[in-house]
Image (cartoon, rainbow, N blue to C red; front, side, top):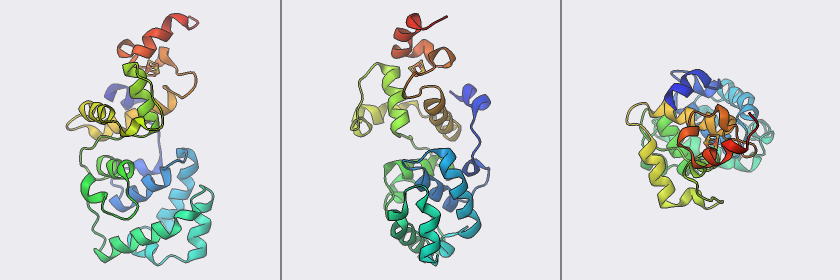
Length: 209
Ligand code: SF4
């Protein structure tokens, strides 16, 4: 995964080196149920207008609503403001472990793990719907909307996450699950995991040469 990720990494503004943890946290919120290409321009507007928690806590209601409306997140405006004010009260200090992040308003398991591992330098196993699909195909298991909460899945994701290069691994799994192990027509011949993958091994003989 790390070798594949080194040459196939997608480029997004929230992956820039040295991104403040605050901006990484906002990016992960914007990416919930949103395609990355849709979220990119909204994220860049956040960076310009609300580069830190205090500025977002004081955001004009109309402007913030309009900014997030294109992602269908207008209903989340009070949550963004509440989160920003809590962080501002802590003088901008953002917790960096999964457990601490989960105590912030509105921060669930995905946002906490992605923020910790991708932006705050703390190892965490990232599990979203795409990664559930990837791991279930890899192991030949069925999956549905509840699989992401299953203990075996969470344990597997944790065991596969490396001790040190967890950021690169996290981005590689997110990218592979989006671009190669797609929901429909996964591209098994291009996949670096095909020799290990139960679904891939089943599909390969049926695919055109
Ligand atoms: S081999 Fe195919 S099914 Fe398996 S992980 Fe790769 S793309 Fe997905």
